[in-house]
Amino acid sequence: MAHRLILSLLLLCSVLLPGPVSAALGLGQTAPDMALSDVQGKPLRLSDYRGRHVVLEWNNPGCPFVRKHYGSGNMQALQAEATGKGVVWLTINSTADGSADFMTPQQMERWLAAQKAAPSTALMDESGVLGRAMGARSALHMFILNPRGELIYAGGIDSIPSAKVEDLKVATNYVRQGLNEALAGQPLSVPTSRPYGCPITYR
Image (cartoon, rainbow, N blue to C red; front, side, top):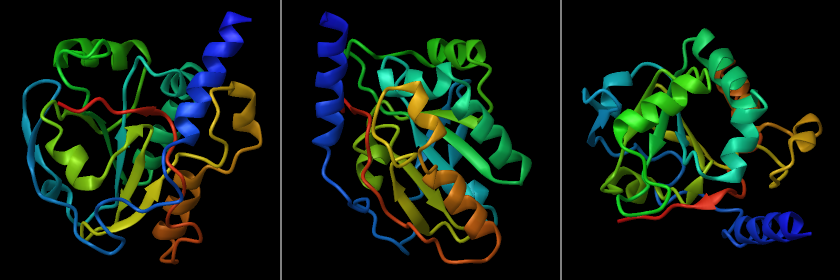
């Protein structure tokens, strides 16, 4: 009973994220070119990936919605599928230090390795500067940039905002759909959707 109540409250929190909305960055606008460090301390900029499609995945390992997609292997499969097509996949953690869910770069790197995750790289955004600039609201808020660095998708990973693994079978994966359309040179049929997940605790 207590477990169901907790899941219900988490789902309510996700539903309360405004939507459908686009990011603070508007569709067609160029993503901010900010310097961040990856989990190994290497400085990177979004402009380093111009010429390729880029997925930005906001992540918080303590979030049940994140655990749904990683625990089922769904996120890893999507990452591998995207990078196999030449897409850059950036997993980003903007959780503030001092938060109960905060992870150091080393902890984040170990967690991703334990999950057998397959992003191109993982970035630490402890100051929240990129998350705020993009308008990232939750762990699992997803963004797609075209090769010019312009925003073409912002929203949820899929169409069912739940922490239930069984919903993966029937949900429309907006990120997969959007990437397939973009790589085929087509406009995205769903360029924005409701973001869901656990609200980001910014500094």
